[in-house]
Image 1 (tube, rainbow, N blue to C red):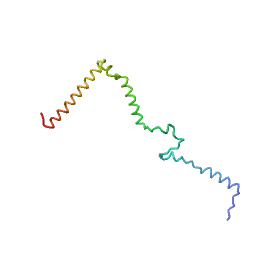
Image 2 (cartoon, rainbow, N blue to C red):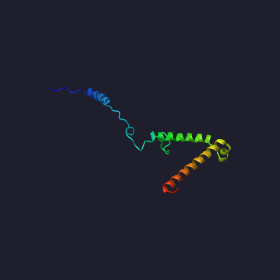
Image 3 (cartoon, rainbow, N blue to C red):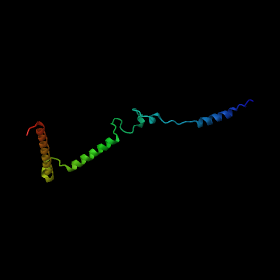
Image 4 (cartoon, rainbow, N blue to C red):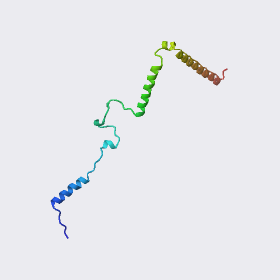
Length: 116
């Protein structure tokens, strides 16, 4: 009718095995959810520098490449541009295009105002 009580030796070994088997490893809270304040140990770069996202970095890299190419292709000053025939012609074409654009605007203005 009555069960025998386990000896103290048996119960202590059983408690140790239960404690070892129920050990649960919980992840760090800062890895689970977003936080504005990161532990200083996790910061890998200069903390005073602004943060750039991938798209900004790609755009910045393209602008650097664009500026590099322009610095190699475009003449450094007006005199060197005038010495090269292709740059002189390109500037003339731009001026003519600008004049045509301005003429188109003034013609449209006259038509809208009813002047001939």
